[in-house]
Image (cartoon, rainbow, N blue to C red; front, side, top):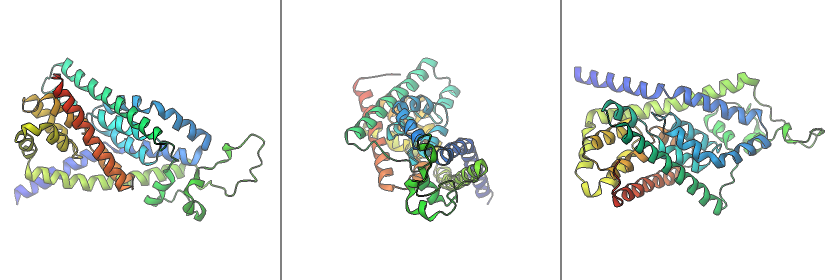
Length: 329
């Protein structure tokens, strides 16, 4: 009984900590998205989307910041189509999660740490630009914002239960500032000022944040409980038992949306169990809770599976390239 209570307390404590630090990231993100929906018009939103062409560069540098807060932010922004798919990939691939704290604690040489982080940033940028370029060639790069759809899914009430906007979400982004200065606005079919000013935006952002955090908290409890009972050693044993396929195994472990994945991969690399290729493959796909947020916010499950599969293939590809070129960090 005592051991059960200890495990339960340990799991709940870690799950609460893993979830709590995401609150400011997600709340600020939803504030931005609500502001885009209610306070800007199509001209402003188009300017933001065009600025997104440089998204992979910014995303790659933000993603490398320790922990996975920015991967959660990017998943949310992508679900609302505020950023491009390439930017999402750049953030996910460069996300370091618990890698940096582990390396610093184990006194890994600074030049090794910087080399690994630099590789993740460069790969994130390159793959981000490639993804966006492919979408442009396929003429699938121009997508309307879907912030209103997120609101409909979460029932945040920011549209004031407007039947017109519910039936035609794209109308939510038509604002008076889209018109010329002398426009009388008589041609507008509908007034979309549903929010109660900044108070309405704050309340709506808070509702979104709470719903996502509850989802992440319960999923994290399940993951932490499994890892606590089974033990993180099982992940290490899985990768150790398959040296020929270490790159594939490490990338698979890296997809686990929990900080334990990056911890185990970093530890095994330090111990010499994993080579540079396997380590890089696993850490490239370790986007942490960003994958959970993507699954919660982006309701297109087939698209989510395709993104995760592409992430895995990317990690394996660069891991194999690292081994083929005998790269040592």
